[in-house]
Image (cartoon, rainbow, N blue to C red; front, side):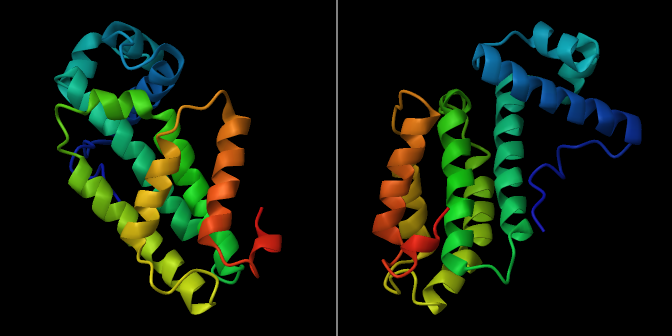
Length: 192
């Protein structure tokens, strides 16, 4: 359902493999070294030459944007993987947790996109399309305030994700407190 990279990924199988290898290598390099990881290092990690890197990603900005969109696509696909028969509040919270972790850990990438936000409309639309049905199910089960909409909840989650945390454990504690404000008290004992 969500393919934010379809127009960017080459159609030939070998070229698509190189593209995917570069995105994975860039994701790892950015997480380990920050958004300033060298393009040479990314090509080396992907096992391709610089010409292949620049053929796929003519600028660092294009590569950063693609890595960000790849993470957003993973979050959107996760919404589809979550059990439709599971508790709606638990499903919504699990999906929001995945989004908050993405947004918090990809801060360097988001900052790298600050001057070239071409991917944001597609990412925004995909995230809202993925989270909207999860939100609606939780509202139908009377586990989330019916006066809220997906935009309210995404802004709430973004607020949690932009915090500067000592470590993952602190981010998780803040996330759990935030979810207690979102999910009705009758659903709280079931939250992971």
